[in-house]
Structure formats: C-alpha cells, structure tokens
Image (cartoon, rainbow, N blue to C red; front, side, top):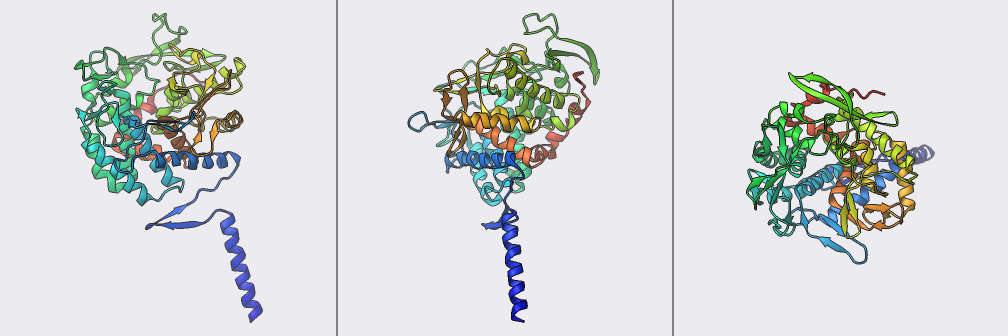
Length: 458
C-alpha cells in the first residue's frame, strides 16, 4: 500500500513538474488569473522578452495620478524625461494595457484601475469640439502651450481608436470611453468641397489648416475610417482620397500607371507604382508606420485582401528589397528619434514624395512587419541587437545610423506602443483588431476594406 501511495505521489509530482516546465501554469494576482504565454520558437521567445521590457516602460513612465505617459525618455548620459504627452501617446498607453493583460504581464483588474485614471484625466482635459490638443503635461493634464495650440486630425484619430479598443476590452470602462468617443466631432475637421480632412485646427489663428490629408495610404486613414464609422463624415470621403496621385501631378517620385474604377458611384483613379516587379499604392514618404501603423487596429490584412492588406505586404517586401539594393545591413525605415531630435525616414521609392534617403533604421518598423514577414523580422532584429540597440531595461532603443553606428539611446512612447501592440497582435491572432472591429464604429465601414481591388497582384 505504501509503495502504491508513493508511486501515486511520484507520478503527481512528475506531472506537476511537466506542466510547469511546459508553461501551463497559472498565478493569482488580485481577483483575476493570468495565463503566461510560452514561446513556441526563438522568434516568440524574442517577442515575449521584448514585450516584457517594453511594457515596463509604460509602467515606469506613466504618471501614477493622471495616467498620462511621457512622450520621450533619453538615456544618452543621464536619464532625461520629456514630461508631456499627446493624444497618440495616450492611445499607445491604452493599447499597451490591453497587450499587458493579453501577454500575462498585468492582471485585467489592475490594468482597468490604471486606465480609469487616464480616462478621468481625459474627461477633465481642455478640448475643442471634443477633440484634443497636441500637447499636455503629464503631471496634471494641463495644456502645454509653448508649442502652440494645435488640434491634429491624425493624433485625435489614434486617441479615438485607443478609446474604442479600451471600451470593448474593458467592459467596466465603457461608460467612460463611449462619451469621450461620442464628443470627438470629426465633422469640424472635414472639408466637403474636396472630401478630405484638414490636417487640423490652429487655435492661435482660429482657423483650419490650408493643407488636407488627401492620400489614403498614410497613417491618417485611421481617422478617416473611424470618422466614417461614427457618422461624422460621409462614406464618399473614403473614395475621394487619392490612391496614387494622377499622372499629371508630375512632381511625384514616379508617374503611376492604372485605370479608373467606380466604387459606390464614385470614380477612383486606381493608380499604382512599381519597384523591381513589386506593385503598390504609395505612401507619402515611404515609411513603415505610414504603411502599417493603421493595421494595428484596422482589419486591413484580413478584409482588404486585394487592397490595403496586399499593399501592406508589398510595402514590407519593398523595404527589405530597398535595403538589399542599397547595400544596407538592416531594414526598417520609419520616422523615429535620433540623438536629441526626431527625424523622418523611409524608403523613398515607396513614397509619392519620399523622405530623404538616410541609412537610419528603427526597430518599431520591424515589429510592424511581423504579420507579413516574421522570419525576415527575426533575422533583422538579431542584426539590430548586434548593433547595440537592445537595452537592458525597456527593450529596443529607437534608431541606429547604419553608416556611423550611432545609436539613439532613446525611447518614444509612440514607438514603444507600436512595438508592443504589434507583438500582441502577432502572438494573439490580431486581438487588438478584433476588439476595435467589435465596436460598431470599427465594424460599420468594413465593406470599404473588402470592396477595393488595388490591381497590384504580382
């Protein structure tokens, strides 16, 4: 009998050890249970390690009273904090909390409590037609006015998207997120004469900007999509955005080919560019976050199989090829921090105007590409680590100049948020997109993504 009992105990002990070793362990924290995500391969191990470090940034640099995250932290010599934030930074914090729960880095209850602080602060912050200004101090949510008082269409779009995801994921917060979303009135930024959103509103001049966001394949398309979903602007806005500028716009980086197509009674010039056999609709500057940042929340890859989704994949191919063709050791070109400053980087051939060619790469561009080229992403990240980009505390630093080897020892909350959300979508089957599209604002315009064929099949 004793032998049998001993055998049972031994068997149970071995089973317990096996379960722990295999990663099927649970830990209790508060009144919720977190399931730790376990890596299936070297790429996933790298992603989980990066996610843990990146999440730590949002924990350490978000004000514990206001729930607002600092815009930037530099570690060139001493720690230098930029203690202000923007609507996009706030959105990235919201997505980071969803990511933290999904990856087992924080309990849902704790994340909810932290986000409640952010939402109460947002409720008290000064707005214009429910839309938020570009800069606020993290300590109290008051406006930072020494850089002007500007309402940005694209930044508000990201904040609205973050609020939508937060309200769907944390149901107890919906009564706080829904009124904030509802009050954000994009009709005040819409120009019906051209069917585009203005770049924004300048409070000092008391006027809308003379320029518009007229090109579809740039990051402001999030604002366009959800403004349609909210009913603030008509659906025709989507079809009035340029895919490629028409051929008579001879200043653009290449003259597009293509044809006119009709969608919902509106004629669209379906212009396309080509680079070494890769066909695509251009972004403005050829950068990765113009191309892929919207797919953090929008189901472009899943629904726009012949349109935006295919274009996303082709832009990743184009960035990889651009680096190879120009004998650059790594790829990933996107606006990011440089030492004591910020720069706009891209693969110029992929843009209508094209940012200046520069051998500076940023890790967030690689993470954005995970859904399209995971093996190439992993290889690229290993190269960036060897160049000294992976910090011990908060993950990947913002940029490296491939020619000089200079690393910008800086973290931007914008880029940290893109990294963390990209990892979460990749490991958890597009979970952030699922919650965005679960809301009627994200779901109602889905047919716009499904309907379009860019004509870029290889």
